[in-house]
Structure formats: C-alpha cells, structure tokens
Length: 439
Image 1 (spheres, rainbow, N blue to C red):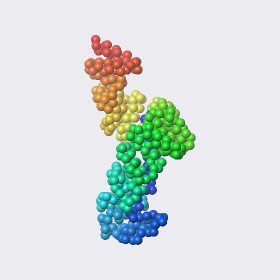
Image 2: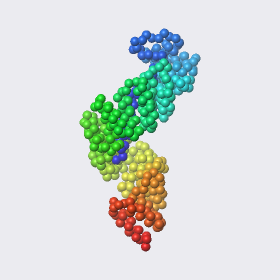
Image 3: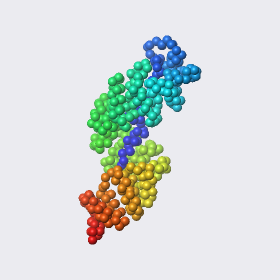
Image 4: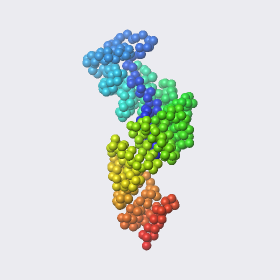
C-alpha cells in the first residue's frame, strides 16, 4: 500500500504545532496599544489614533472601524491607521478586507512589522505561497514599539511554514525565536519535524521523546514518532505505540489510518482493508481514506472493489494523474489492457516523471501488440529509474516481435544476467529465444 496516511493526517489536522501560531493570533495589537486588562494606566491621547486604538484594545471594533474610515479619508497613506483598520477587519472575521488593508499599510510603509506579520499569518492559514515573503519580511523587521513576543511569533510562523521545503531556514528561524522567548513543547515538536525534514531521524526521535517524557499522552509527539518509524520502516517500533494510542482513542481517524498503513507495509493487506472499511464508515466523504482503501483492496487482490473506488474518485476528481495511473494498474491486473492503456497514457501526459505509469504503459502496450509504444514507454521510464529484469524482458520481447534481432538478443541476455533464477518461466523463454535467434 502506498503510504497515503501522511497526506490524510494533514487533511484532518493542521501540521504539528502549527495551529497555536495561527489560531487566535491573527495579528499583534496595534502599535502603542495594550490589553484592557493591563495594570498600566491608559496613555494620554497624543493624536486621533491613540483614542481609536484605545477602542480597539477595549474590543470596540465597529466603533474603531467607523472612526478609522473617517480618519483615513483625510490620511489615506497613514500606515499605522491602515494597519489598525486591517486589524479591526481581521478580528471580526472579514479576512478579504483585512488582507486589503494590510497590503495598503505595507505599500505605505514596507518596513512596518505588524502588517507584514498579520498578512503573512492570514496567507499561511490559506495555503497562499505569498505567505513566505511576508513572514520572512516580518522576521527581518522589528515591532514598533519593541515586542519580543510578536517578533518570536513571526519567527515561529516562518519556521512552521517552511520546515518541509526549507528545513535549514526553519531551523534558523526557530533558533531565533528561542533566543527571545522561552521554549515550549510546541517548539520541541517543531524541532523534531525540522530534523526529520532535514534527514536527521536520530535528532527527530530525541525531540519527540523529550516531549513524551514531559507529557506521555501528547498525541502530536506520538503521531510524529510513529510517522518517523514508518518512514524508516521500523514497524516493530511503531506498532506498540500505535496500539497504545488506539487503546486510548480508538475512533481517531489519523491513528487508524496510520495503523492501516503499517498493516499494509507489513503485507497484512486483509487486516488493513478491515481497518479502512471501518474508518470509511465514519468518514465516508474523505477522499484520502478512499484512496488508501482502494490501495488496500489492490494489495489484497480485490481488484473489482478497488476499481469501483477508483472510478468514484475519478468522478469526483477527473484527470487526476495519480488516480488514473492507479486505476490503470488495477485494470492491468484484471486483464483489461486496452482500457488501462488509455488511462495510463492520459496520466503520463499530465505527469511525465512517474516511472510506475511508464511501466504500466509498457506492459499494457506489449499485451495489446503495440510493441513500439512499449519500447518508447520503457525509454521514458529509464530517465527516472534504473532498469530491472522485468523491463529487460519487456524490451527483449518487444524488440523480438518487431524483428529487431540484435536488440532482442542484447536484452534477453541482460535479462538472463539479472534474473538470477527469480523468473523461471521467463528465463526458460529467454534462453530458448537466444538459441533460436543465434542459429
């Protein structure tokens, strides 16, 4: 089974440790503003914005918005007022308007930390690639007045955003945050994720274990450690953790998906099917679970069930190259080579770098007598992965059927050299053809 579980987990929850950065922290308070719970006396108004920001601190956002609209009609490029107006919209859930105000504030003052951070957080929550630019800019600026907590928030947000794509930058950002703020369990979890993304599983495991030593019930640390063990194929280490976690939370979609992936990786396809069928009854509309179940059906040899699921998935997501390739592989197993070829060729047009798709095209083309297409597909496959005994045999038989004697002999011999007795019937055929072609 392909380990789709990790995509599934991401669809069920925010990335580990990311939610505290985004939830309830859309933006720092406006410059010069303090919480109404503060022991400090309110500042003496020095300009119209001071009074307006006092209303913001008192959560009087509608009143502040109206006053800011009047003020901005006379001062349209006041970056502080533009940020304040964006903050009011942000806290009231008016995200589109907030983004617009924050962008205007940045245009008025590109060095304003608060608008960079606020816009970056919104874009990050939306998966917008522009988030990185804003958060990197915020991480390089200073709040005005100084606010170490807001600065650390910007650095942590940047680290969470890029830990998979750029672990070195993420590590640097997290270290910067820890220089100006205390370490939290979320930071330790993030450090584990950064280490894993950077290819340092030992450091990642130490970090996950550190969190578990402090909180043995930490679902994020348990999930992260299981994920790490699964990636390293340490299934005997992952299984007791999974079973213990499932004993506490038997209905967890993420944990059940991980357990199904583990069963599939251990070749226990029928058990994986059982877990996923039960999970799908609770999450009938989750396409990630449906994909995992289709994979499990394929591994268990239940091609009809797998094909039905793939058809449903393709109806919901037409022209998905991975789904088309997967269904094509199932159709090959069902002996429906012409149907498989159509799907696989369509998938290859969209995603040319998938060697499994090219392997499927080569096999289906050979079975339908399209030997030149089989050779062309194998040539494409060889751009991405090395040859195998199976691909040598396909090249040999396709060349043989096209009456290309020298090529056929070459690939039959390469096949025999690499097969090492693992394909007795094909090796018998190859030896026979070598004898016949060399007469």
